[in-house]
Amino acid sequence: MKSSIYKSCAQVAVFSTVEKGLSFLYRIVLSRTIGAEGVGIYQICLTVFAVFLTAASSGVPVTVSRLMAKSNAERDARGKHGAVSAGIACTLAITMPVALILFLFRDSLGFLFSDGRCIDIFLLLLPGLILTAVYSVIRGSFWGNKQFLPYSLIELLEDAVMVICGVTLVWGVTDPVEGARGATLAVLVSYIFSFALSLLWYFRTGGRIVSPKKQLKPLLASAAPITVMRTSASVLNSAVAVLLPAFLVAGGLSNSEAIAIYGAAIGMAVPMLFIPSSAIGSIAVVVAPELSENYYKGNAAAVKHDVEKSVNAAVMIATLVVPLLFALGKPLSDFLYSNDLCGEIVQTSAFVVLPMCISMMTNTVLNSMNCEKRTLLYFCIGAALELTSIAVLTRFIGVYSYFCGMALSNTTVAALNLALLKKKCRGADMFAYAVKGLAVSGAASAFGWFLVGILQGLLPTVAIIIVAAPLVLGFTCAAGYLLKMFDLSRIFNFLRRKKEKEK
Image (cartoon, rainbow, N blue to C red; front, side, top):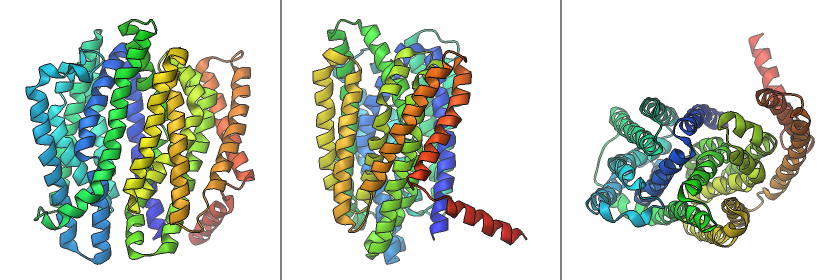
């Protein structure tokens, strides 16, 4: 069973890494074709759209997956189909009226955007609201059935379609508004593709639509807190998209300058800081159904094992990434975007990755253990800290107020989540490993900073990245090994057994 979980994690991680790599390269193309201003307009439209999509469906796929895991534990095949049917019914009941209302009252949407040029571009996404909400339910069924290969393949193909269409539509475009329009249209095409392919796969593999009555109440009860939390997160991002440029303008910048800074920060720097989310998401997708099934079976030992391994994996991923971002944030941003502000932000904010990874993973773990209301409360506390930081500090530190708020929010949520997990899983030890990760990240970041400082006077940017990246990563691994964050003996034993079998 453990080998199956590891295999599934590896499978999802590989596909997800390729998918995120495509998205990352696409961001580079966008930044170099439509510029920071175009990226800012595009990012604002996606941020506002995410609010409505999140409100319609964000809690449903996780809940569908958990209800299916519960049905598996109870050997209730009809309950699995009922969970999917209930999810589709709920999302359609919300998204269809919302899309119609937004279209009919499109002339009154100015209050949602910090830039009026975004409204017409945003309307292009309305059909995708309905299609993607339904796809999210089917995605939850993939998780619940532990069908990780089709899920990963469809996600990758969706991204590939978006990249191909987007590059085709924005290539040669010089106007930032037209560039943002083309990039947004590519997103809609990718939504149509994933919707059609996921439905085809669901029905071809025995999926059915049955009466949702039995599963509606438990689905709504469980999905509501998750949906509220994730919708609040989207509202928070949308508020940032309005407030941050407004505060920057109040500080003396023009509207175009403020949008360009917002585009560099949110459209360029944030994706770099979220690089570990690909691996975190891969682990969460695989572990969540297994954890839920063990939780409902009352298998405390298995739950404790799943929780410790999941959280420790998140810490390890962050520990490997933080020094690279801190040391190479500026050279990478210069090479990828030719944007100095992005590099400064990435280097300054690199350490937020550790609490961010912990909070992401622990949210998934706690939601799998029926703690949705507590995670919602903790999120609200973190969101209040983030908004306060933006409101109070933007006049003093500019766009960095957002990243200061991100650090306060994620650190608080991570600490609260870990404390709750400690109560839920007696004997689970996660704090010590997190402290080790922080220590290793700090030492490796200092090493990388000194190394890059030496190389900057000797080598060009690309050469600095090629030389420094493996050295920083090697130092991080060596420090982690000395602090016993991982055990190489398991790898050596595996290789030895494999060699013996070959003989």
